[in-house]
Length: 414
Image (cartoon, rainbow, N blue to C red):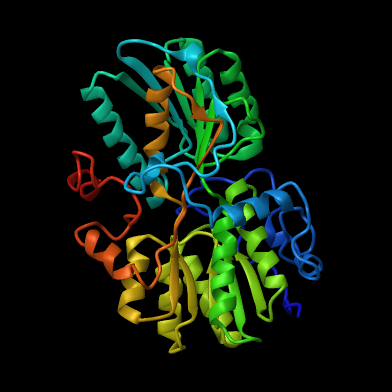
């Protein structure tokens, strides 16, 4: 049966300070406050797409979607004790012999930002990994440029790294997909080995592109959880951050596809900017209109605010799709609600640093390095909470830094 979809205009504009995980700023996309209905990745009306699933478009490629869903069931190559070095289906390996180098190398990093807790957690993990390799004499100088969520600033940062000409390797975490593509291509053309991670760009020129399985897998896993745990006819509210960043668009495209084949009713698809106060206000407004049985989020930052809206309204807790941020995991345990903590593998921030070491050693690396992406479930919730008992609320459970010398102080004192 097809789902029913009640379409509402977006409550929020895009001028909100972004605090949610994995992303920082949108590309050029229509403001949802001016549209009569939520749009899918290809810009089609969500009600139309719901009739037959998500349509093919710039941000939804069904072949890629199906690949990611299949990768969830694959056993990664490598030691499960070091998931940041595991690889899922490494089809093509890049020959890095031309980049082999001796002695301490200068590692350069162009970062989109550290404007949300997910990125702060990952940035701390990266720094700790760099310190290990500096102590081993692998890395000399670690040069960092933070773009502060500004595409133009990041383009300028990359140009500066190229013109300086002293980077032994350049790591790039792009702020947005399309806008940063030319800058990444220019970096590749300079001859420096380029490592892209976290989010993609529209080129495969980098030596390696490092990322967890991806947004399709993330979004589908959350939607499937709601389908499995809600009664037919139940209502779902989808909370999105901003449009235009590939990994987030993929998450909603996948979820929309799953919902379209279910008996659930999606009562709204709202952009939130990742702002807790706005999230709480949106959920409160929907609860005033009627029951909301499930919450799907494309990123878990701000999830606690959504839960609190149900508490303030005296409503039953929904079935909830959150993330592995500790504030949500602790709220989940306290409430006993039915939930899942999806993960976008925060430990991926170690991988590009270790990839640089491999490249300098002339070792092969995957052209596309796909990392595992396992959620926190009810079965292992208590274990992750115990392992992170002394960590701050905005910390991410799957940060992958327990074996680094700075643990736990570096993450506690950020």
